[in-house]
Length: 509
Image (cartoon, rainbow, N blue to C red; front, top):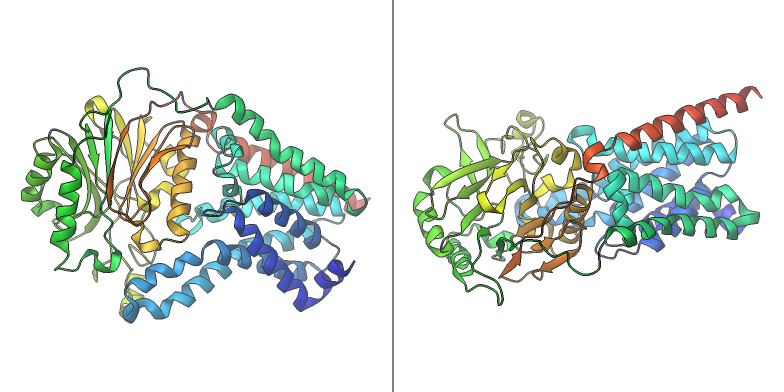
């Protein structure tokens, strides 16, 4: 009862909701405390669906969301600290605006759930529907930001395999249903509710037991060997004219290094995002040097290019063993305020440009997803940094890839949580599609991920090195790869119609 009175106190209620949000965030990488996060969500749902004016509950939902996003996205200040004199003043505003802005989606979900639901059961049902819908909406609105979704707390746990059926939004829906069980059972049967919620949350672990084979999945045929190069060039030093030759030579040395014991020379070598300082149009001499270091391998390298019209692109180039440019891919899903500035001409008046952009307003988006034909290495779907967080973009590819390749420069995100969350999202993409993911990251974490989302090899954060790995074979297309988010959307539509009918009956009954 004391806890209920605390919630009903205006200031204490906001503080408690904010604190619960911080605990909910512990399920995200690098902590990955999914069960603690689930318990915090369960307590939040139970307390914030008590009879109260909807405006009050909306504010508490906002406080809960603010705590959750502040706790899980605090790394957002890191990019602003790279050039401290120029951008440092923006760091606190970025965190406050990001956390408070994303929390508005949760505020709407909690407020409307109480507004629509006259009974406790209906309020909880509406909350599950609306909070799942809010997470979906923020995944698409304003170019989308599907980072630290509620369902992401299960990445690394057996429940992650559920994404092969229903994707990240299915995981979010399942998590909220499990968290709502104690509230549905009520205070008198709280123990039964906790048992029911725990049992429901454990069900996907049984599916994972049958889906995932023990150990590493072996390839039926001799596999192609892929090398990931991790140069470890700190962002504040990366473009220093005195250090550029050092980092470039480090790339070459790691590329030319002997093969890992038990493996042949690499067939494909992958360098991270924006690995070299030369534009694609002027990089031919470097390509020859890179090919010599590669000793017969194809090279995938991140760099920039500029079109004849003056547009800049964040690009991945594919080089033949002799250094000839075979193909290229331009990043199409750009980071707002990082790689380009919305309302560029307005911000330019104050000299504010994207963090990774130049004073022309940043990068231009490429035409969309594309497949790279890599001969014996099969077809790879390239993802440059941020693009790996968007499952819907992968679904728009012009065909099914044999593997996903992500090049990224996570040096922008520090070493505490941002790179670990980025790695976690890469693992989830592998599970959803049933294909392996190989990611080369400048400062880490470079990793080889099998089609079940397991990290089979990785390089430590903040260390230079190379990683040789036999390319895992893809699985048959998953249910999610074939159907996408449609089943979840249909379920939510059915739930909406059911709750609307019950709410109408309750109102007139």
